Amino acid sequence: MEHVYKIDSQLQLVDAIKANNSVALKKLYTTNYHKIEALVLKNNGSQEHAKDVYQEAFIIVWKNVKNDRFIPENDSALQGYLYQIARNKWMDILRSSKFKKTNFINNEMSILDKNIDHCDEEDNDLITQKMEQTMAAFKSMGNPCKELLTTFYFEKKSLREIAEELQIEENTARNKKYRCMEKLREMVLASKS
Amino acid sequence: METIERFYNGSMPTEERKVIEARLQQDAKFKTRVEDVKILLFGIEEQALKERLDEFHKELPIKKETKKSDSKVRHFNFRNIAAAIVIVMVSATFWLINNPSNERLYDSYFKPDPGLPTTMSSSDNFAFFDAMVNYKQGDYEKAINKWQILQKKAPDNDTINYFLGVAHLANKSENKAIPFLKEVTNSNHKAFKDDAHYYLGLAYLKEKNFKEAKKNLGMSSIHEAKTVLSKIKD
Image: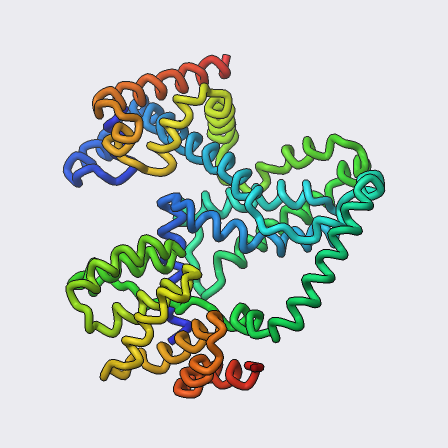
């Protein structure tokens, strides 16, 4: 019986991840971090390393769940998958020659950045590049737009809910969202040239 | 633009979807536009998640913090640390004398009930299973609120009472959990009785009512109940 419950809850977790449910995401994040931290600290890494590797792995898991590339088959599949990816990532970094040379210099961060794309080999370069531009543009966006787009596209709240929160008309919210999207697009286009 | 968004978030009726899919096949220009919007949407989501992760990270339960501080800081804070150690030791001794590990017993044995499987076919009881989804995601408050409404309609339903009790317990409000679990143990239905006795026993243990805790754990035939019972110290 117990077993059935657990597989069931994995499927629920998958649904929750797809919906960006922040309670579920946070729980998945916080309950699995220390295992990775222990692994990295034991293998020549710092807490900074652990955090970076773990966050990258977490995003890959999230992406693959969203694209249905990962479907859980046993009761701790997702957690195991997360651990596996983070572990492989850390092993890659350890193996890379750059890490050996620059071990104690402060630019370790840049090495991590170069390793990010490793798991996305299927995606072709152009899409990855566009994606990076979009993310960079969104990151540097002004706060009101950023918040509005986050609540709409990430938290999946409806325009009506957003309008209520901001105490504006639904149509005003729609216009605002539209303008923010246009702005983001312009920023992406500008970064291309 | 909004059309393409609707195409991706699944709110589009099938017919309209087919039209777009057909157009995607033929019109290469349209296809790249659609792809661009898709990347835009994914980019926003991913960046938003990335920023969330840093927030999550700050809320991590802190482990082995003291080990990491370097020697300078340690020297500077020596007095504070010494004071802290004394306080910790004093309170630990105090705690050990006063609290004969029963609190720890609760913490190591309490594990929220896994809940019932929520399957598609149970749509006749949608409200109940809707709350079950919240429960399983750890959103106990929401689940409690939803079940409370159902409980008013069917105050004798042992399933609702049981899960209300367990949800309150998982939400760390033992005093609210007890009346619901009691109700289940007193009812005629057998399905949840064993589990209810076990959780009721744990709730009393947490409340330090050891007499009732022992009584209820003794009435449950669950394996863990016997283990906990044998470990309670008065």
